[in-house]
Image (cartoon, rainbow, N blue to C red; front, top):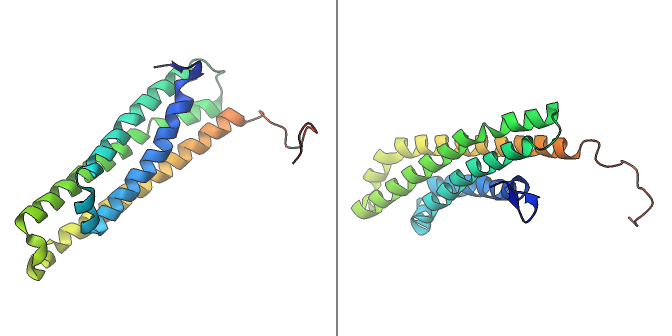
Length: 170
């Protein structure tokens, strides 16, 4: 996919990534910290993470097409390099979302959340899952920010005047 209605697909697809990665990261962290939220979300959590994971390479491929159709400069190259690093973060979000969904389903099926001793025995696992989820979620969100910032700089450098042109009212 290179063009959508005459526009480069990358500039449209990037909006999915900018919304879905932070949304998935937030949902993952909430679900790992608050098991009732994970039970309520059910299969929606890993499905959201899957859609997020799929959107990243689609956006990257569209970006590679666009890179070949714009002037070559250091800002575009930097944006492309940063963009290539998002897929592992999205993969981590997906794997952790599946693990949280699976573990929540198993706990609900076995009724292990009902007894205090079962909860305490699972505490180290939950702490590790929470730390991993927070780390991956933060890494993914920061990476999306860095990629977006570099993309905006690549697209808009020297593309506007810092002073008003006098044509419009402020």
